[in-house]
Image (cartoon, rainbow, N blue to C red; front, top):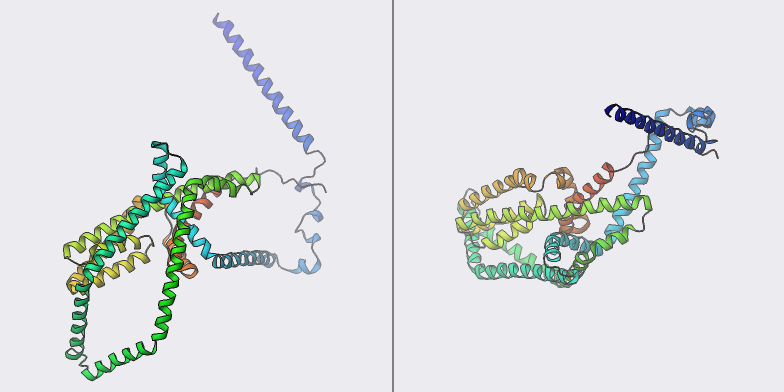
Length: 418
């Protein structure tokens, strides 16, 4: 019985092998029939191959090969530079629209986890979930601003008195210190400052009017951001599929998958940035409380907001904290705050960001500085805010497209016989 099974198995393997050989021969025959009459690149005569000296004019043939390659690269680079210049011009012209869209995209990425919880756990419809999340976010921001303003109003008179006393100490040092300035020289300096204020009162009034106009524009911008954020949270995926629907069919699915990967990167970046900013604000806030510096809560809030602008924001907010400590508690307290700010920044740069953000959203420091500079030039502070997330998203999307592209097989290049 065992010998019979072995013979049957051998016959079956032989049959499958013959069937596989027949399929391979049939596929080869079909390929040969499809390529029948279509010349291959190697079959061309030399004078028909592009770039062969026989196909070029006499003048082109006398140009060195390296110079021809350099010229080909040059005009292509010029076209790319022109396209980039046009793109930057369009961004500058449309920044009034692009800035609210960018901020709304960041807010949508920040609120997306809460939106997902309401959709999955509570089975809420998209519109209701987006509305509740948006209201909760507005309530949190309003509460924080209320605390900041109330503490600032309560502590400003004391800080103003201390600042006046500090100015008086500076005056005393200027007159009794190593500079030995006379009272007449100080009075002349203050008179010059008063004269400058009188002469520029008109421009200051215009600045106040401009500030009022900017306030109105800010309110309009705020409502637009809230409106766009609501629809991004509710219909974000449908909007993305609609926008990518105009692409050619072969490019549609890769672009969609790259966009989804970039969106996950943006969500991870915003969540990690919020966590890092909270840790920074908590550390510096506790230090200010220990030293008994006034306005510790507004300063901690400023540190939290400044952390959203990498490198630059932390430096500016730390400098403000040091100045307030100098005015409020003196130079020793300011030195302690300065050391604490530097320590927190080093902890953020070398421990928190690599540990929390990881390699998926890591961006080289040079790219960060260039992105922030370009954002400031194009759109001011808001441009600096959205520049780094934009670079992180583009980095992930481009990497995804490159890593998932399908290379053609390295066979002979087939060209049309026409």
